[in-house]
Image (cartoon, rainbow, N blue to C red; front, top):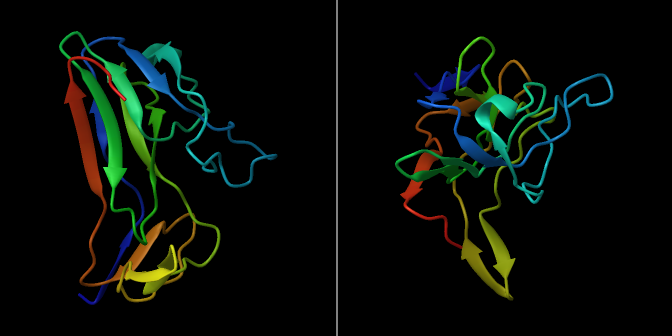
Length: 161
């Protein structure tokens, strides 16, 4: 196998109860939002809600914080290089469940530069091969070998900055 295509992400997060959450969200899907709600800098307000109160028409960006009876759990990802970002949405027909949705790029993916200026000093960023054309039906298309992003969970008794 010299290349692969990821058409969807089947990751789901199911919680025991209708737990409190702090989630940023983007605009709902619709004709006025041709990118399907997958646009955002992740710099919005993270307002309190319950899992059941999340609007299923909205995509919720990361990090996504859930307060379970046992702990606070932040869902996030890392090392997102040449891969579609994960967003979360309530899963239709499933109680207290969020499903991952990959942001579909509507342009040809651009590779990270081999080096970039950081305070006047050039530092290596990524030496991955140039990405292959991606679209809504094919959010991840890459040559092998290829690394995927980390899915990370930060668990703690109290939320801290």
